Image (cartoon, rainbow, N blue to C red; front, side):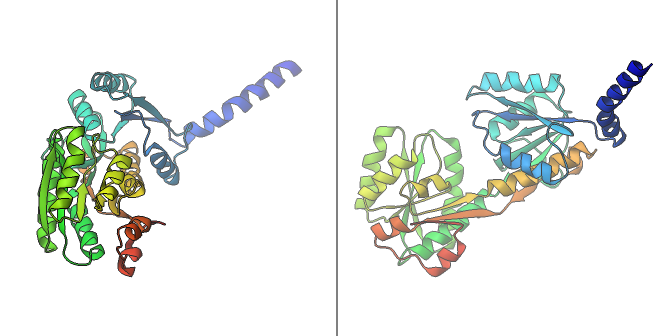
Length: 321
């Protein structure tokens, strides 16, 4: 009897947490995370935001991460795998991930992030009424271009002539150019578009830009435009680089205006939190991320003999000296 009582107490001790957990009504939920690049970028910010909303990793929620290492085929297979598990929701932090999720399911909730104009890309009907199973946070590309051009206007000693260096093979660069043109006109600046097709075109393009009297080049993110390489080439040609990624500013560029990814994935966590608690994606309007981070490289400014106005420094989240 004593042995049986002891075993009973041990079994009760083991089951008590599970019973208490069940009584809370918060069964462990599963969140699928798709990642084309396998970098795991922003996953930590999302997890912290979920914890801040009361979720406990490994107890009340878990993340099923799938990194496709750049393979579209693997991404499609991983999407199907997450659906079969099944997970309760999928986070798709990029266009390729969002399109893969959209192709794979019309019922499982999908929260997208980091995508400009999801309506034009066929992911949702409208931002206010996304419809079906997809919602999330869109990036404000036009507003970001306007902010970047405003920073350039403040940093240059006079309304400068600006060139946009574009990868002709990247369809997103044409859309970005349209936003940059509008932003340049608004700030009273001329903007030239310079397209390149391959790596060997970049160096002569920058030399030509400089000969035309241009002082600033805007460089959208591209696999062709490696930040350190572009920074070195620009400084050799006495050109200031402005970009939408802080990596260019860190590698010799002058200024960057980038999306605040921590803020974006805090909002993604809010969407996931509400969905896991019973909300339907089609009842959750998409949000537009309008918080940006400004990076200023004061060392580059000194090299180019440019003064950084106090107003620009006041806007900067990061100053590189």
